[in-house]
Image 1 (cartoon, rainbow, N blue to C red):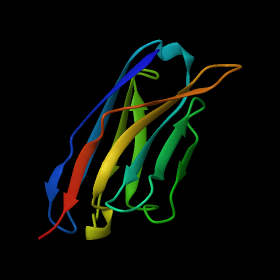
Image 2 (image 1 turned 135 degrees about the vertical axis):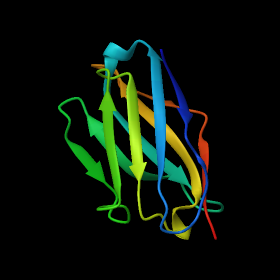
Image 3 (image 1 turned 180 degrees about the vertical axis):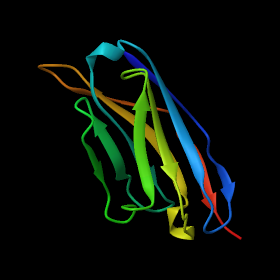
Image 4 (image 1 turned 30 degrees about the vertical axis):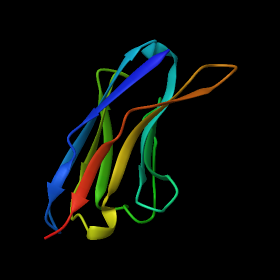
Length: 118
């Protein structure tokens, strides 16, 4: 089992920055990838960014050049640095971990609200 706890959301003006944090606990050595997803009202949850065990990353086209995913402490903490925020970035942001070798399982945090408005 893996537990995920996000922090760092809030209200920010357009053009501003926020950093989200996700702390993983439990069986962190089983984690293969960690990432961030977001869900805006009346929309489906979408990938924002992921980071793999080998430190390769993938970003949604809409955030490339503005957001950066990183991690420290091995697999236990992942960050999402969000710069040049736009109103369309407003959403609940969820931390995700994919763990397991043969059978992979998704774990989710509780979500943190990010609101970009003037």
